[in-house]
Length: 476
Ligand SMILES: CC(C)[C@H](C(=O)O)[C@@H](O)C(=O)O
Ligand code: SF4
Image (cartoon, rainbow, N blue to C red; front, side, top):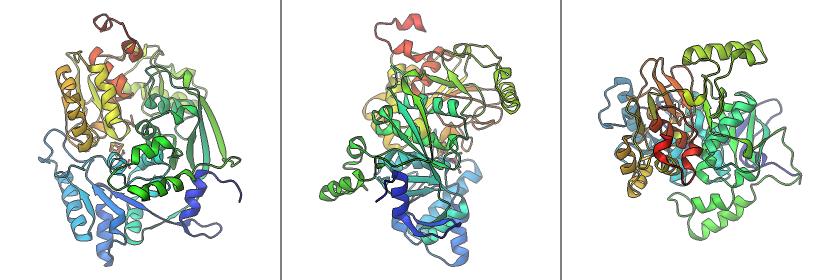
């Protein structure tokens, strides 16, 4: 048999029908549902008198609209309606729902892996662009639109044009204090926000193999910000160890058999990708974005760029507009940018390891007096775990707010929003105009960098803070 990439193996195993020049019909193994993109889909089913084809392969949660300070007090009428509608729909159609009372509730892309719903080799869809997160397990996972949500609910199948394959090879090793978030931000800054349009990325190389599952999720999460349909990382011992014992993962003998199958998923030697790019992890510094797209970022040691330094007219204009919106002046050192708010959370960086990293930086220090900082666990399970480890106390003692799980300030769909002109160090994945609130200014960073910025009141090179023997007081 011809050598195949991991993408081709998963694709081939799920194609139900194929015709030249037409999209293929794919079988979907797991359909994740949240309150924002599902109401019309269920309504469509109801109008057509259809049932959900596989309620057992469908799993729902509420995340975008959930208030994180007082979660049962949903004041916004649209938010409340979306959440109530989801509850009603799940009851009527027999779908398991992690609602506000459930210890399983959380951001859809955090709970799927946590519960072991996300497994290697599966096809996974959700009406949400960051479904790419689940690719960290070697699952083909991508976002779909509301009409497609309805189609999958009704049939458990989906029409899809076959994407091309792109290898992003990450050689070397990430340096001290440099995280998976910095890696993906650097990849997007280097190759652009559309370099992977039409492709499924497979991340390969030494640096990727060394990442933990949570770090791999951070990388795959932002594949969509590079334009990719999905991101994939081959499952290995790290993956299997993470999945072992998870509630919905195969158990006992079944697990061992599954591992044998999952091992076959990796790209065969000699298989070719449609395109390939390479980056050296050892050359990456902690990143901070300065603009209004995730690709507009630079090293913490750098400066706000001069729009005139960009090669094309379109880029020059985009940079100029972005700096005007962000209220930044070319040549300003990144470390001189003062911030008002800090948000640590989201499906990019709201998992336990992210909170541990941030807590390590925050420990024994104080949030700067002019900064309002908050930590929002990605799920209730993450929250429980963090509290067992005492991380909440570290954060609270340092002056961070400690919240309940939800999308929170990743996007302005709940009470956590930036005010006009406020500047935020955020561990989320999008820095578009108005993303965190009208007129709000978002700088994307790692959890480590966000925690350090909260304390200093401006961006700092967290590597300095992490080096042993350094006098903390002096650095502040
Ligand atoms: C609300 C939802 C449809 C949206 C998405 O698809 O990604 C949101 O999660 C986001 O991050 O912008
Ligand atoms: S945390 Fe942000 S990116 Fe993730 S699903 Fe929620 S809104 Fe979308």
